[in-house]
Image 1 (cartoon, rainbow, N blue to C red):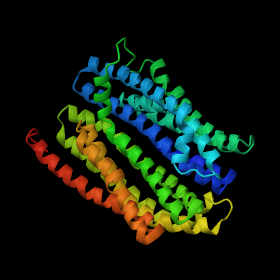
Image 2: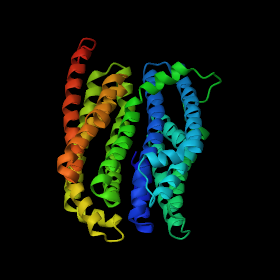
Image 3: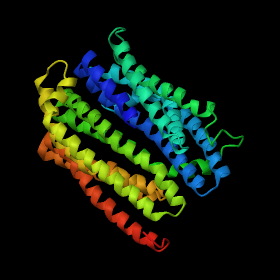
Image 4: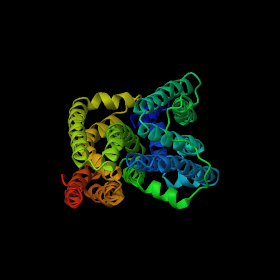
Length: 423
């Protein structure tokens, strides 16, 4: 997950250095399309791999093996949809997302190339999830890091020596998952996989059943994209393109931090699914508590560092030394990043419910974070507190959802007590 977010953070850094504030604004306006593509990939990958792990834990190895084939069919169908959107609707989408005359062309280029590489993003996510759940988490991690490193190298090469501008930045992003797929393929070449492509017809209900367990991952990504879109529109009316550029810096740093929490969540998923499949309730709850403690400790450390080094963090992306960009982003980091103290808990809790095959609570947590609470909070708070209201929307939302999530889990534990002798 850190690898995926680093694709975008590397783009942000090199775009800031090589193109400037207009490039940052264009990148942030186009970013929601990446969230959509990545979200679909995570839904298919996490959903299919979670069902694979649960069935494997129950001893249904033959049935578990067929899950991979159905997930690949879903990747193929979604890829066709994205490529059709790229060919016929990308210009309309760029306009709808708020790209204006100064940054329209760069926004359109980013949208078109991300959609063109959507099959690679989808397949990389699916393979990564299945390989990790097939007992090879080190290879899954190595593949993500390999893609991230390749993205950074290509970003530098395309933007500076080759002077390709925004096209170079997004080409580097699109080529990164291809590198990940290349490394993940060694899992099959070395005959370490317990799943393989089977001769079976696509079954829509199986695809939907698999995807259902990954819906929280999709909603999390869609909510991120929707929040960025709504925030961009609100900020354009308050601070213009410079405000959007400042938000781009904050949103992309936040993307990496949230990816750390999501990475912890994805790491515990196969462990919880396996214990749950075996009926080991104490182990399930122990893993959940350890993950919570880790995320809380990380959040505190990250916030203290960010508060202390906010100026330096913003300066990395402010190559023009613009004082307005520096001031807006500096203030935003100190307020916005408070939300990390609750966001990690929410992501772990949502993944916990997905891992035990209970999709509804996971979906509820995800949709509360993204749509139901965040957007009204941003609109309401910005109407009387301007940019401060924008920054406050994130921590307030995460705090509210954290309370709701823990209440849901407490109720869930009471229900489980009726089936397990020890909770």
